[in-house]
Length: 249
Ligand SMILES: [Zn+2]
Image (tube, rainbow, N blue to C red):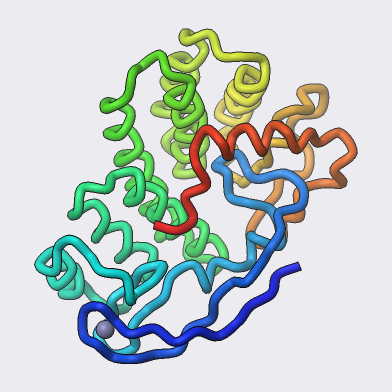
């Protein structure tokens, strides 16, 4: 279960003291989606992933933590406060040169838009996330397994944004890198979804069941991750290790 508490934080930008909800503990039971959105209960804790200063609008996992560039932050604040906190956090991290963090937060913005039924916002954030993830891949050794995992994840981000050509291209790229059987299964499953022009959320668990691949798509925050019988949570643990679980950026 998820337990939460209240903490007080002094904004590093404007000095305003404010109260925030913090997640004391949570759990993830079942399968993540193919873009690694976690299952419940973690799935429903997104509203507490970022703190927002009520006075100046600064957003961060911890708004009291010191930051490298005040100038960049002030510029981001000039954007509308009506944008989601995840969108603003993503823009800030991109400006500060933390591309992985920027891509991750753009993806979180898409999940948040999914939950609010904002389809256009979700597509926009997914495209932005995929474009930034692409840039981060250039900086790593191309043979590294992390690159393969990041590419596999990007396939899902492109597919769910409806960019089927980019998603398909990435499938071939990954298969050329001779991934192991787990990743190969996921990529083949993605291939079927792409051919079916399916933009719904599907879980890693579904991709591991190639005999009946397209049944019961998961969608939105209610996705509980299946009954778990055939689900091998080791796969999830392994993927988490590869990517680092970057919920707090
Ligand atoms: Zn503030």
